[in-house]
Figure (cartoon, protein in one colour):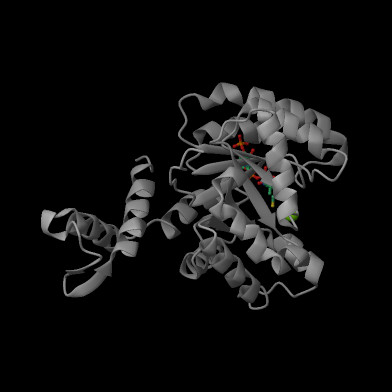
Length: 293
Ligand code: COA
Ligand code: MG
């Protein structure tokens, strides 16, 4: 398996595959990633047409640096297998599985991808949106340490979590926060990216900005979005600050000095820096380098 290139995932927009206008709009948008949705944004009677619309997307893709992911229906249901087949034909960067509850759900999807000779670089993403997924988080995230599993990103499905658990959805997300923090923790343990849930009230820009800032502070890599108007704010909130970038450069430069070649720990600007910070710094710089102007 090839090592995954770190990439920015600040702004990750759901686009219903059944919405032709939205699909056309996509090529003009500055989100890091688009998730073309075949699942909950598509009505049962539109599933077939939505699947067929996937084939039209490849045309826009050539010059785009945007990451492309397809969300399929659960493989345990009636649509999932056909969705996955259609998605593989598009050769996206990743496949997002909804309602993942156990590692097995991911292993099964990975087996189908292997059998279809999907490239090693095609990733699996997992929605965490049920109580069972939360209880199995450790085992699910552990797959991230095995490149053969393809797992690269966890996505909070906050609307489903609210529905499944009956917690009240308050503006400050106080009842969701403990689970979201567990999700972030599990993702970090598995070397995975992790995306915050969507903000439904997309006309309320101030409240959205607040939730973005909180998501960034909680350790999320980025936010899933439902509307183009949310992209710029997410790109801003989840971007590395100039200070963080300067520090990352100083760490990389520090360890590159010949006198530090054999050192595990060095001092930069009066502060101790370890080699574990070097990997983080390189990751941050690589992600940032992939963000276009
Ligand atoms: N992706 C791409 N383009 C989108 C878009 C999206 N998610 N949402 C809206 N647009 C486009 C519209 O097509 C419209 O394009 P136009 O300028 O060519 O007409 C433009 O952005 C403005 O859209 P607007 O009129 O403000 O919104 P709307 O009323 O058409 O749609 C929603 C509102 C919420 C129905 C729509 O944003 C949506 O379907 N979002 C995704 C929902 C989803 O995927 N849910 C599942 C995951 S939670
Ligand atoms: Mg869901």
